[in-house]
Figure 1 (tube, rainbow, N blue to C red):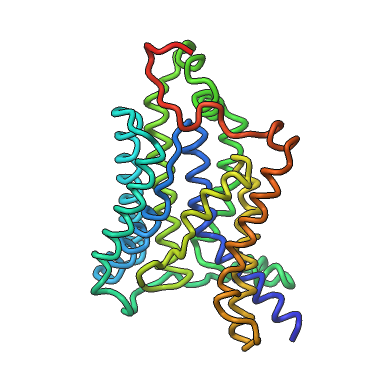
Figure 2 (figure 1 turned 30 degrees about the horizontal axis):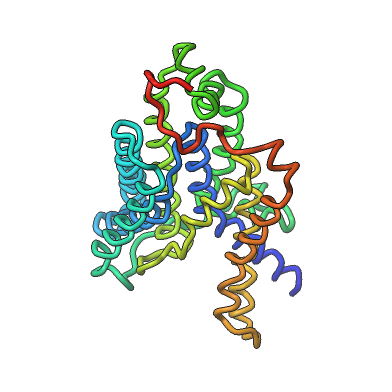
Length: 311
């Protein structure tokens, strides 16, 4: 019984962290280009509501997923236009995007609250799914979770082992030097802001089409803000983002199981645990001065770049 409980916790941990990991990797790529996007909460909500509405009306989860990715990309394009072309304040634009996305998602989804639609179901992988403990937890998930098993190593390899990845990091660290070497700074910032938005939209769609199928206001429950925090926790590395997603997903899974078991701990306190844990981890990272100096944020993060300007 104890083993079965542990396996169930591990399985929910992986599933709960999936949507968060998509959003975190998307934001890592956006911030690596030098663009700060604080609009993830609104973008995830738009991805979630778009995915569910389209899937419900078309009876196709794939159609819902594709439209959610498209909406995320369009919101990323909007943020890129405001911050790169118009050189608007990136913090203000991100907060405005969160407010806009949250309000629009609630408006679009108000007639879909409580409805049941199609969803991505778990797929058992032969042989791998029969591995004790890990097999049931890792290889009986939905296809969007499996996609992460490929996406994370590819994202890491691209960022650190390829020339385009080097250009991306250069644009975020020193856009003047990158421009002098012929790198299209504005073009790359547009590209990765849109790509990041697409992954954020996909993360939102995973919530409404797989993890908690359906739509309700505030479905993301602050996951967009948690993803922004996990970018710092991961020190802008896709591989380390997995640890943050597992941490959040694990605490989330435990608190749900504790509520289901009828513990005497108040439900609001249990609901608070994943977010409190994230804050504690961030405080520890910030306090560790040596770590901050060794691995920090991209030097040009949040700074608009104009070719004629000099350092």
